[in-house]
Length: 399
Ligand SMILES: NC(=O)c1ccc[n+]([C@@H]2O[C@H](COP(=O)([O-])OP(=O)(O)OC[C@H]3O[C@@H](n4cnc5c(N)ncnc54)[C@H](O)[C@@H]3O)[C@@H](O)[C@H]2O)c1
Ligand SMILES: O=C(O)[C@H](O)COP(=O)(O)O
Image (cartoon, rainbow, N blue to C red; front, side, top):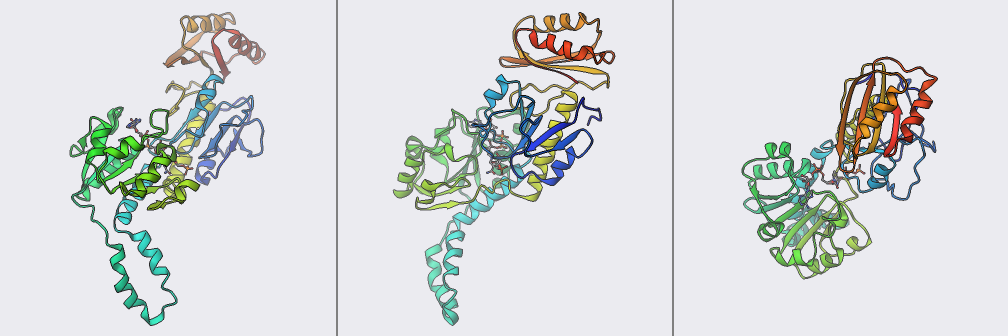
């Protein structure tokens, strides 16, 4: 971690409850946490919907203490030169534990059984007799020997797949974009589905762990339900919009889907039969909230202090050891001659470049340039202005 001084105290704003251990990362002379500030340098957020928010002109970074960034207008951030971070894997164990709990509990009708038992409270000495007579309503199914389909084998999906094997399930996974790291962690006993339809056709239980994107929205629809086995259980701890709710309602009514277990209730879902709903509890453990908050805060701190980038969803990852002298961090379009134009501007101030790194991501690129001495403080505003005048530069910071 860096220990350098920022030019001025950076303002951090939070839009959701962020674990104290994460906020503590900012408790030094370089940062102030101010949740009422209109012009923060960085925002730390969980699920708050930022799509209609106006961003202040000082905003440089948004850190999602969690994984899904569908609540953040990432394209707009990129165009405005705002780095968006998330915390891959930091809440994966919490979600995995809830998925496996729900898989077993719903298969054994535990939630319905528990709710029914509570209705017997006034039956006095009759309760044991009523329990024995009533339990036949809640006969369940064992998961042993059944097939679990896991869609998305990232941080959560891979953990679920591996542990389901330990519960004696057959596991089939589908992920056309699986990362090398995850592939290494995945048990070789997870069968590979080459298409989503193969998985749909084979699974007795399906759990989905993909981000919400234009490609995944509504992936559970009439066509998919038609391929699935009758009485399939579907677990959705990813995002509600992955499911076409009109089609799900019909599939639940005609018994094609036996149960729909979801972390994303809304009016429509709460009025469907055979649903089990939770109030978005997947990442809500002390451990996960701390992991996410600390990781998000450290990434933002590092970015503001040194310009280095780790786990951004829109900027390239870049790391250059900070020398403690002067650094210029530039986010720009990924077009020819940008680096040439930038270095020409720097040399017009008779500054010598000690080190530099340039990385691109799609239409944009990020360049860090280290100067071999401190830039004269009178020159800094002019140098910054000169940088920002170069066509194609989105933002330039002198750190
Ligand atoms: N309920 C909760 O509280 C909670 C908590 C954490 C994450 N989530 C949700 O779960 C999602 C997954 O989280 P994660 O940590 O595993 O993310 P991750 O990025 O580690 O994994 C996502 C995986 O999905 C795969 N994928 C992308 N598009 C796909 C497609 N069309 N078909 C199949 N696979 C596809 C990717 O290749 C990747 O391996 C998040 O995006 C978020 O929406 C919910
Ligand atoms: O994408 C995520 O990380 C989860 O949905 C968790 O969301 P939360 O931080 O609002 O609990």
